[in-house]
Length: 195
Image (cartoon, rainbow, N blue to C red):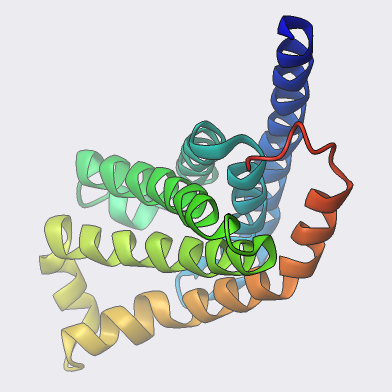
């Protein structure tokens, strides 16, 4: 029994290593796709897959890697100029919480239907990512965001200017990749899946 558990843990670590590399590569590739001032997050699908395979630890780890990758690629430089601590807190929290939320939603719904569980996890991931980003803007960056909005309503600027296009792309990308995620989960040995 201990040998089977050890083998299962090695598989999960291997899958997470592959997903970690994928998150880093996709974050760098995402720099070339922009809606407004920020690049899109192509990394949310691997975060969902990692959260499904390795549960909360996988979601946490891949979300943290995503946060570090955002910081390292310079995608948060606009906010770093305003507040370094606020930027680090916002970027790390949005990554970690979107991974944890994907794991939680998958765990809750996989008892009933793993296809719907993957779908809901893939939907909640960009919602949490964008939601925490917007909350971070309110908590740490309201003054510059108001200045950036100019004569436009600040709330509509935040939803449409800062986050709108990216959120819709990320949501569509995750939903589009749901069948791929489900297929990957189906070919994994049952002992490795999160259920």
